Length: 161
Image (spheres, rainbow, N blue to C red):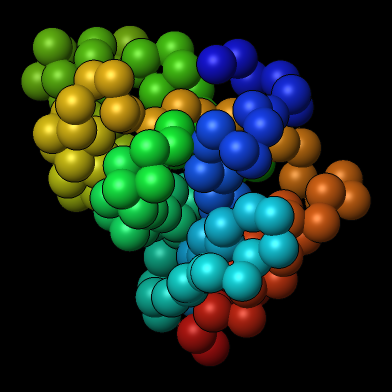
């Protein structure tokens, strides 16, 4: 799947929108995911001292953890929709493969940020049957997409002061 905003139909896919928020960076943060089309199924959480990128990762990781088994049971393809290019490009451009091969070092030979979250997230992703691994789609944040606006609101509410 590409990084465009053309999403698969709801009938063959389970679309889960994710977002992270942070009040200050670092500072109190929140993450959220919600199932399209209306967010009736959703979850959120937060941490007191974190960064926006960590919360984006937490949102995607929790969305996969909870929804991959549901997608499998419903025989649908899981699609994680995020306004985080950090998360989307990691999977679509396969950054994680190079990170693992390079001992969790990036192209600049520096340690990959947030490996304590990336490692379990990648392990969870790799543990899935390759045909059932989620796809990642990018959506522009704060652009009027109702589901993106919903997860943004949930993530902001989950920020712990």
